[in-house]
Image (tube, rainbow, N blue to C red; front, side):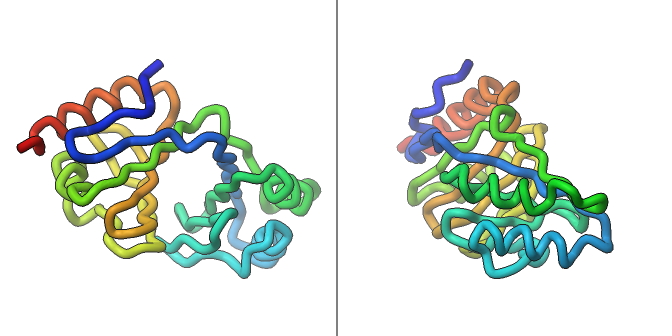
Length: 174
């Protein structure tokens, strides 16, 4: 397993633990159910494409049929699971054990990421999120501030991702 607290050149990489990751998958006719489930977690509605809403918990739009709920409190995720438990058009899939969440911080954050992702794919605005290919693996990038971003990746990819971040960060050293 990769070490998750390290420096990628001038960018600090920290593990976000615990972070609960719940995939809310839904069919087109489940919009009202999805909205009610997110409200049960304390969120005001459903995020639009590329948008992140909330402040612990957070909800981010991933695709027309998937919203990701991120939370530090299991009470919030349990409320969503309960709200969708008997719904034939939507479900809540707990992905927490399979997802590694990292926070990247630093003034050269975008310089680091531009070495690893397509420049048009980078979320630039705080409150935005995208699923992209980073060093040839699928990740989710969530922009919180100009110099702070969360990166979600499948845990089996942790060592590979760590190596790429360190490699790209080394090129940024003075």
